[in-house]
Length: 291
Ligand SMILES: NC(=O)c1ccc[n+]([C@@H]2O[C@H](COP(=O)([O-])OP(=O)(O)OC[C@H]3O[C@@H](n4cnc5c(N)ncnc54)[C@H](OP(=O)(O)O)[C@@H]3O)[C@@H](O)[C@H]2O)c1
Image 1 (spheres, rainbow, N blue to C red):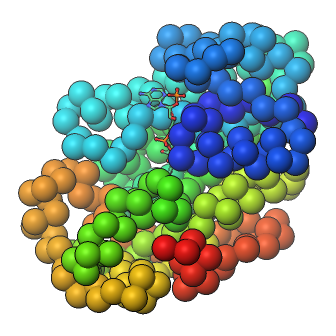
Image 2: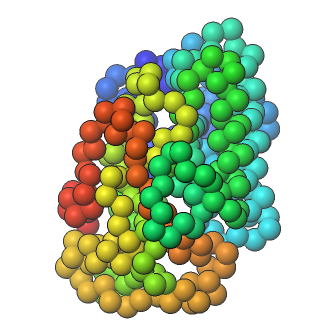
Image 3: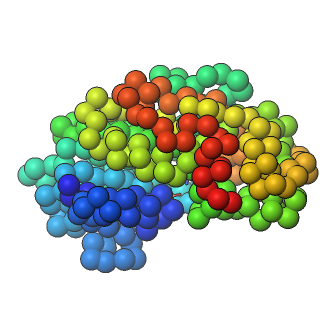
């Protein structure tokens, strides 16, 4: 299979590129910084040779949301995804033979802050910055379905691996015994092991019944308090120092909503399509990471 990947230099993308190469697929990395397929998502459609003959496109590029949300940062977060995805789809529109499938990143941020409500792919979006960005981002990707391309928007939860993402940031304080729940700890925190994030992406590439939104989360959502307890246990460290919501809001600003929002998300579409999770339970996922 020839797979074109944007954001392939990032945390998830890098692991995906390795997995595809390991099984003998041909990978085309579209990157702002790394050749041969240089592409700035904001500048216009990708170079045609990057997409030509590709069987699939995986679109992961986007400005990191893990930063202080100044007005300029919010603009970058939004535009890199919205204009970037629109430009990618423009590139697909002018192809003679477009790829069969586009897998485009999205996030559980789509659902906003929802208390104990169980959220599957049919649930309505939430309100606020991330739900708004996620909706337009997905809409831009879904425009490719008008070209006969199967589109999967992967609403990803917190991807667990010590090599990046939220867990990498949490490890040091937890290892120092300074970890604990965030806010009340009652907020639901959808998570997924990196291996399953890659596994379900490979599964989505070849599963025609999957299209539209797909919750990319393990089937065992936990509250933040349960998560930090499990992480403390995996590290054999106490996890009893809470970070109050007001302190998080002062330190992180508006971005604190990422860790304080409650999203009890379940992977309904993946389970219906028959995806078998390698790490369905949190303690096993953490143990497999050898933290
Ligand atoms: N990690 C998670 O837990 C998580 C959870 C939910 C959703 N997601 C979504 O999944 C996707 C991949 O996540 P990740 O953690 O692998 O991301 P990442 O490590 O931050 O990598 C994203 C890639 O996007 C490109 N990029 C960065 N800033 C950009 C900008 N301003 N404009 C255009 N391209 C830019 C970079 O590639 P180049 O420098 O090569 O161009 C970068 O390697 C993202 O869209 C993210 O929102 C991730």
